[in-house]
Amino acid sequence: MPAPYRIFLALFAISLFSCASSDEAKKQRTVDDVWASAKKSYDDGDWLDAQSGMEVIKLQYPASQYADDAQYYLAEITFERGEFIMAAFNYNLIRRSYPSSEFVRPAMYKTALCYDKISLPADRDQENTRKALQAYADYQAMFMSDSLSREAAVRTRELRDRLAERNWIIAEHYMRTQARRAASIHLDAIIDEYPDSKWLEKAMVLKLQILEWQEKNDDARTLIAMYRRMVKDPQLKDDVDEIEKGLP
Image (cartoon, rainbow, N blue to C red; front, top):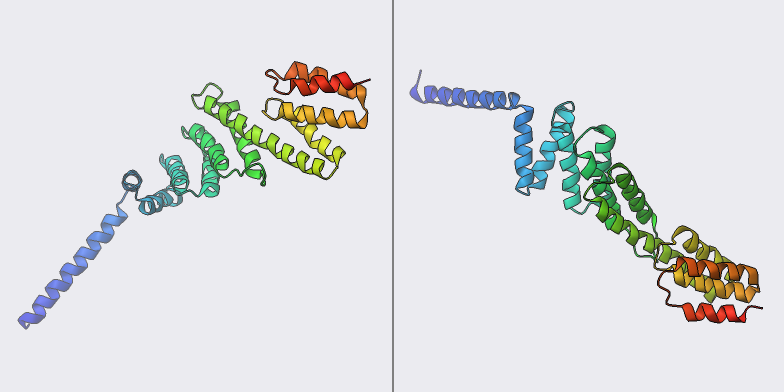
């Protein structure tokens, strides 16, 4: 056999052996190997490789000890990318699919945070504000003594103020168009649903002015009594006193 041909066969055999060895190594890769590689990629900020590895664990090793870890870090990756709708979906999957996981607590808080981050100003649609409030409420109900519960309470207060402001904006619009009864509906919503908001006093005073215009004197007196009981640091007391003096 000519020497060049023998060299070619030798190189071909080496190539086949290398490919076989590589394929065998891939076949022998364990879930621990996949997790270690994916987690390292995550820690290094390589989101694409990390996501790929986490997906492999979810699809090929759904019953492994790393399944809930993979789901949580998939959620974290989408959160870090600013894909908050997808992140909320991924965080919710942890609670539904792995209810006993150690990641349920942070995932529930992060779900609320996702909706909080995409909540719009008071003059825009408030669907995500309401979703954030519900998610914070779910979190606080389950982890009321957790360190993040206080932060959840702070965010809840701010979001409730936003919903109250939404009602105030609509009430002002109706007042400009002389639709006082329609305005009253939204003022009542502030008084009844958001008595802890910073819009309470303004809503009560405007409602008093409407009642005065409607000559509903008994209702006005009842609201004045509520005002003095509910408003702790009144800024519009003089206006209320003036309305009261004018009642027959």
